[in-house]
Amino acid sequence: MTQPDWIAAECGPTQLRLWQMAADDGVLDQASLPPVDAAGLAQAVASAWPDLPDATPVVVSGAGALPYPAVPCKPAGIAQATEQGRMRLLPGLAQEKPADTLEHEATRVAGFLAINPGFDGVICLPGAQSRWVHVSAGDLLRAEVAGNTPNGVRAKGFMDAGKLVPNEVVVDIVKDRLEGDDARSAGWLLDGYPRSKEQADAITEAGIVPETFMLLEVPDDVLIDRVVGRRMDPETGKIYHLTFNPPPTEEVAERCTQRSDDTEEKARTRLEVYHTNIDAILDSYDGIIHRIDGNRPREAVFADIDSHIKGLRA
Image (tube, rainbow, N blue to C red; front, top):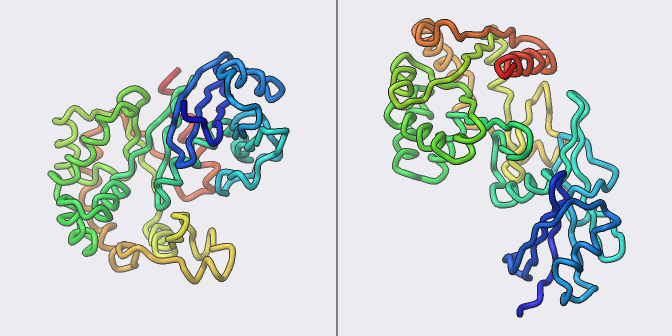
């Protein structure tokens, strides 16, 4: 039997999950046990694999190692782990407003970002609580463009001109994504889509019917300022804004780039298209529209959105 180079452990609320890991990060074996705290980890690992050497290092997430880094930040790596014998305890992540923490899930986020370093969107973390899949049509399109897929090649010309991508291209991309197991089981959220009456009709015909339509209302000039000042760090995928959330150092600022469709000219073109189409789109979702003032601090906007979504589940 091949001996593992190290063991990965995830301390969740309902079970302890263990993986024997090879030097190339391949999985050799795995086990699931009842939940334990940090003090019981060594005994749990020994009970799962009694023949393994006692010196095999164990990297653990969800064991309550402190302090928790405050977001926005990268999930902790091995350099931030707390050593307890052969155990390497990784801290989770903390959020101030609204107050919350990520425990073992933080390592899942780290793993996802390790293989998707340019990701810009929302990651779904399935678990005991209900979860949402945040799907941004713009993100999906940019992923197709970055992957140089046939749909991406077709979409790029329209995106660079600030125009709407043809319905058949976007609907196919969105439909494929919403057929994923996570979206089927946990639900989904479409961000910035549909953008025309034709798109609304097309996704309805495809069986994509939302429970609610949330409309964030913001003055045009404010929207343009938000778009034009947006920058992305190509090394981390993190999004900054020159005014509201500037890069933390000159080094980061120098390497940040602006997306080709984030110029003022293209932003104004997109707004013209929006105002031409919005009334017809709203007619398609009459009865489920919830209007939100988006020209407020993000905490207030989030609170309204959160309250509305929770009301749907009441």
